[in-house]
Length: 221
Image 1: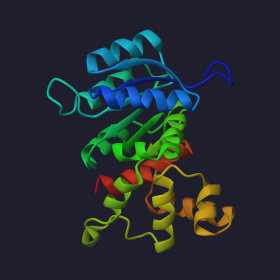
Image 2: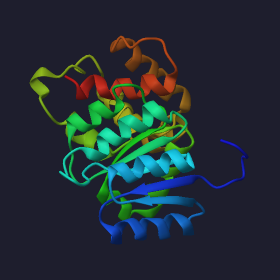
Image 3: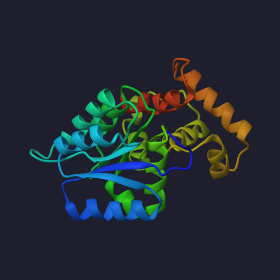
C-alpha cells in the first residue's frame, strides 16, 4: 500500500442501492475512501480496473441471476488485480462459497455475513484487515462447521483447547488476542497453534495461509 497514512481505498458492490450508499457513508465516516460503487458484477469489475482499490466489498448475489455473480467476480478480481483484497458479504451461511473463496489462498480475503454490518466496529475492522492483506472468516460460519458431523470429525485429533484456539484463529484473531480471550499466555497459544498445524499435517507455508488452511481442513471434510 502506497503511503502508510493514506486511507484504505474501497469499491462497494451491492445491487441494493440503499445498503450500498449506507455502507459508503459508514466507511467514509470511519476514515476509508470509497472510490467506486457498483450495482452489478460487470460494473464492479470496471470500477476495480479503473480505481485499483485496496479492497472490494462484494455481495455474493447480484444481477442478473442473483446466485453467485459476486463470487465469480471476486475470483476474477483475484486473478486480474492481485493487489486488491476482496471481502465477500453473504445473506446466508454457505459452506461451498467459503471453501471456494479461500481455496486458492487466504491473503487479502474475507467472508462475512451481512448481519455483521450492524456491528460497525467489527465490519470496519474486517474491511481494513482485508485491505491490508489479512484474512477474515465469519465466526458464525466457523461455528456451523465446528458443530456438524461430529461422528466423522476430521479434527478429532485436536484437544478441546486446540478447538477453541482454532475457532478464534478463524475469526482472524492474533495470538495475543486469542490469549486474552482464553486467559492464557501467548506462549501457550503459540504451542496450541503449532500443535494444530502438526496434527492436521499442514504444509510449512506462510503462517497466515496455514491458519486459514486449518479451518478449511474441517470445512472441506
